[in-house]
Amino acid sequence: MRGIVSLATHLPVSSLIIVAPMQVISVIMGCFIDQIAMIMIAVPIFMPITNALGLDPVWVGLLMLISISLGLITPPFGLLLSIMKGNAPEGTSMMDVYGASLPYLYLTTLGIALFIIFPGIATWLPRHM
Image 1 (cartoon, helix red, strand yellow):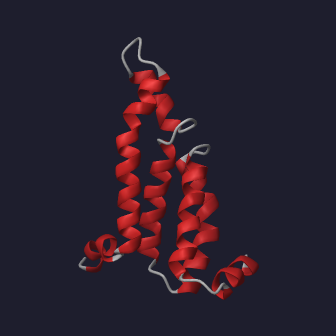
Image 2 (cartoon, rainbow, N blue to C red):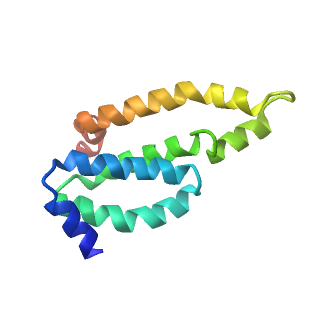
Image 3 (cartoon, one colour):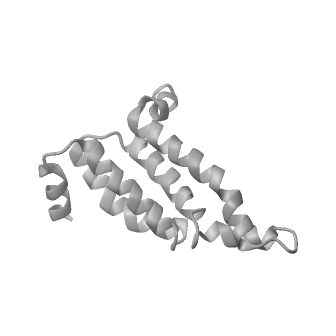
């Protein structure tokens, strides 16, 4: 674990460049793994990196949760897509389900980008509690 943290802290790039692959990994894991399992795998790896880089853990945690939910609706293996197909009316194809999930994919990706560019959006309410 110390090696990963050391690698992340010694890279000559911005901390946002470190956060972006963490979110991509969360999305990819979301295509194949349940949410609780992803959190149990990723948090022990991501949070020491977050702390070492001096990033807000609430911000990174929120980004991670949104990325996980994005992975769960990402075709072709998103776990929630199968649930949607099971609840859809008879005659609905899997391609119809994929098409119906596209607006959510685009908007969630836009939300993640906004949270990365403007971290204050995600941390404003927790700071005032």
